[in-house]
Length: 439
RNA sequence: GCUGUGAUGGUGUAGCGGUUAGCACGGUAGGUUGUGGUCCUGCCAGCCCGGGUUCAAUUCCCGGUCACGGCCCCA
Image (cartoon, rainbow, N blue to C red):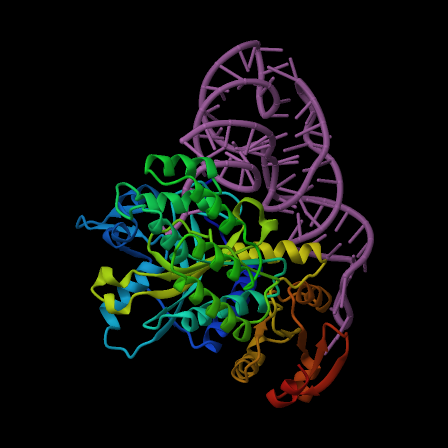
């Protein structure tokens, strides 16, 4: 039997109901914050992603040639396509732009729980506005989304690549080099907490090893905005400017007013995100109980539009939310809490079965049409069983009410409307208004 | 890229070198020609794929596929 390709999933009606509810929730939050939905192609030119991330990414892409030998790839993420779209379609739009997107992305890598070859991302980008206020707007949306879907036990970490960059530059490290500059290498090591590796790197570049202690102090800062004053002290000791810290400090102050309270929000100056196009604030959200794949959201301020000749708009700020991972976390938390509703609003809306009993179905077709036209979710019974079996079937399929029409009903222009939840049954006149009132 | 565990109807499982492969849920048909979620009965439906060992493999061995873990990575 042919089965679905590795790392892909099918979504049955029950799963889709949950996913649609979640998508709607995210969409509503995005709109509440002014972010408007866009959509880009599932496949793009290969160059779009090699320009952004280097030729090395190709091995992780679903890249292919079409029949005219164009080099294409399924998209591995959505930021670059959105940047491309802005440069092609939205150059003359008044800025700033608040854009949101949702869709599947594809990466060729090992699949396991929480990591799929086809996965879904919801994300936003704020283009044409920079600074702590813009960044706080973006983070506050992220927090609002996670807060409103009922997620618990999540941790926000906010850092600032500029701070580390200033420190490492101040130590005399270069931002040039292949395949990776000393500064980028240092950040990666700091992000991993690999102090031995860092020590080795510093000695090869002739950096005084006493700097390690200062960096370690910076990395050990743990807490909210108050930790920034300690950071400021350390930087002063090292004779490093504190502009980035001032920015971060301002951001946290603004965020405090703008965002719902997150379960845990900490400053962590070693958040490096592993990406060299992030230039300022960076942030991540983790749900520790997810284990190995616990990061559910990540973003920050980055410079990418210069790749499209729009350097005046850099930097932008945005984040990507791991749709599948947040759902996994919600499902696991709902199960632990014994809660049946995983995503708020996922419960199916009321629906009605119209059951012609021992009469020709043609007698009720216009009723079905009119009920649907009045906005009800209506199914016409197609099985033609006896009433007992039909009610059984209706309740197993989640109907909230059944309209039963038999020969006598037809004669008297009436019908029985049974509420499957309460069990109540009423005889009402056989017209849309009367039935609508009661279902 | 490295590595561990697993795979039996649609779902969850039992079991075994020779079995009519058991059970529960599910689906379906009836018991019931105007009232469901109970009950009873019949039926449907399975040993992931390929190779090897063996008189005999669903069971043991090897490879593949898929899933789930632990590292690496994660634009």
